[in-house]
Length: 268
Image (cartoon, rainbow, N blue to C red; front, side, top):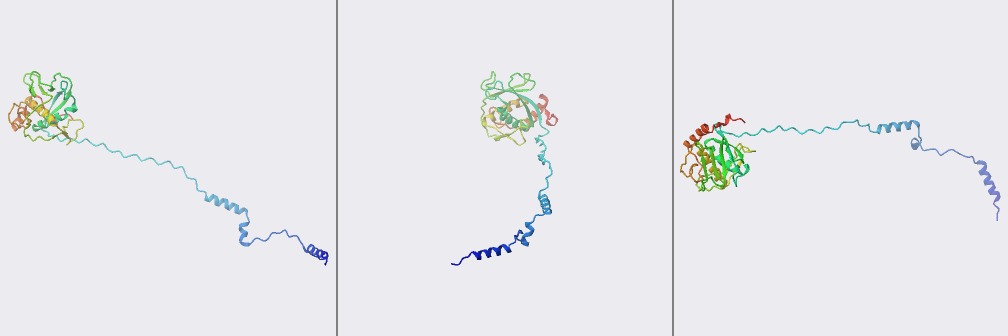
């Protein structure tokens, strides 16, 4: 077997003689050189770019005011169309003795029906309501279970030298005639909350109360009984019409006896 020691020595020697330590790094490829080297000016550019990329501070903008709702002008009340030739006078309705007609609300259909009938003569009653049974300086209408000292009649009118008083019983009973009475009455302008054209439903019972009330007021306005069954002054019927002569009498008496005033001269 050959010994290898001399050969090994020669190789080592050769390596030792030719070896020079190289501390330089491998060159950086040109295409990567720019990205690999950091320069002071690059840092400055980066800060500048970052500064440019930051959004500018938003100025303080006051919140937008909530728009105020438009002001709607008040609606003027609708005026009732009233014939200027209408004559008005006050009537006091006494409810304290009644067992049925005890409130203004309850009486509304009765008054509406009486007003509808009297409107044929362009007469307007201006009602007030009270529980007091004392007489007043105006025409007084009392609703009672029965007429004092006159049982069995629907109503009575006292005039002349006596107090101006009308009595109507709570439960009027009339003979039905073909009077063509509308089922509803127009709401008078003096009803609370009434608007032009408003209708007031009137039952048969309420219609009889209203017709009898108008009948007795008719006596106060100078009209005697007239037995034409469809006429307001017929006894014991549901008739409600007035003829031309009766209308003239009613208007003259309203002015003379009750000092009735034309609507156009009344205060609003």
